[in-house]
Length: 190
View 1 (cartoon, rainbow, N blue to C red):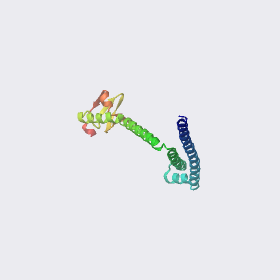
View 2 (view 1 turned 45 degrees about the vertical axis):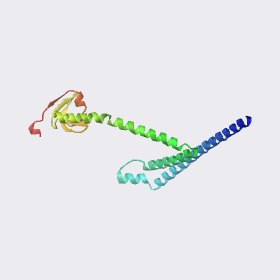
View 3 (view 1 turned 90 degrees about the vertical axis):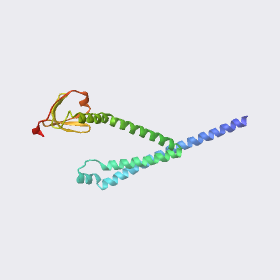
View 4 (view 1 turned 135 degrees about the horizontal axis):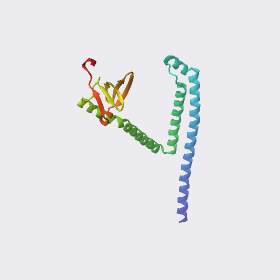
């Protein structure tokens, strides 16, 4: 009985030792990657500064963005990601982490799409209603929510109204929710 308990304990210690070793080596690989990424980023930035990339881009395009920092930051990120994957692979949890990251990306993209279409769908439905009823036409003078002006354009998402020199954009869905008054355009304004 003692031999089997000793054998089980010995196997457990070997297993824990192997896991701990993999974890420590994985962390060391990641830290070495951090150092290499920092060095690669600094070298890239120095090379780009020697070629005066920012000055050249600014002269040619007029854009005042630091492309040197952007590119060197991208190099840092790329090298870090490579060493992170190597580290996770050595530890043996690459698939788990990549699956979690994939799920997180899918959730973020889904939420972003839902938020993006949240306002679009009611405006598209309202656009169809506006066109079918024929209540609004380009050139009509309308008043809605203390805004009075001439309709310049009825698009899929909004109605563009000119009030003197100002242009006001009103979402189509507002025309289904709020009261508005309209004066038809005259034949001379066509």
